[in-house]
Image 1 (cartoon, rainbow, N blue to C red):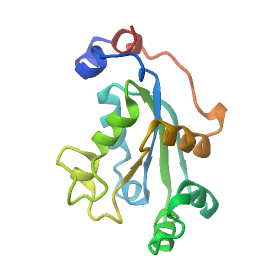
Image 2 (tube, one colour; image 1 turned 90 degrees about the vertical axis):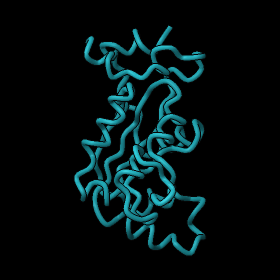
Image 3 (cartoon, rainbow, N blue to C red; image 1 turned 45 degrees about the vertical axis):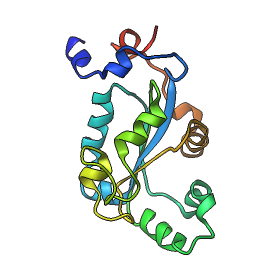
Length: 171
């Protein structure tokens, strides 16, 4: 897979440490991203970055799942609007694996408010308003683990060997 190596970031080719090599993170394309047909472009960004997709599904999110996912926000005044938005259409939820996946994904996604997000990030390029910011990304390795367990059953995540992952991301 020589062509795949051309798209692999140097940070993956030469990691400074091995702690986060197989780190996993949850990325969700929200209803506005699905409606605007941005799923493929978002997936492509993570693939080109060198991450390995280990879980993927499309679903209509229930209020129960949202209340568990956004448990820290249930008392906020905007929570009912958030639930209405997140249940307004399908969501595409993914688990990506790779070196320093959580922190790198957060940088790729950009700041929550698209007005503050840099060009070149998902939100900087595609988001219209803070209430319609296209994607969710786990905010910490611990948060990612909790979210992955919430959205995926164990058998829905695959452990598979990527044709170049061992060459570029593991020592």
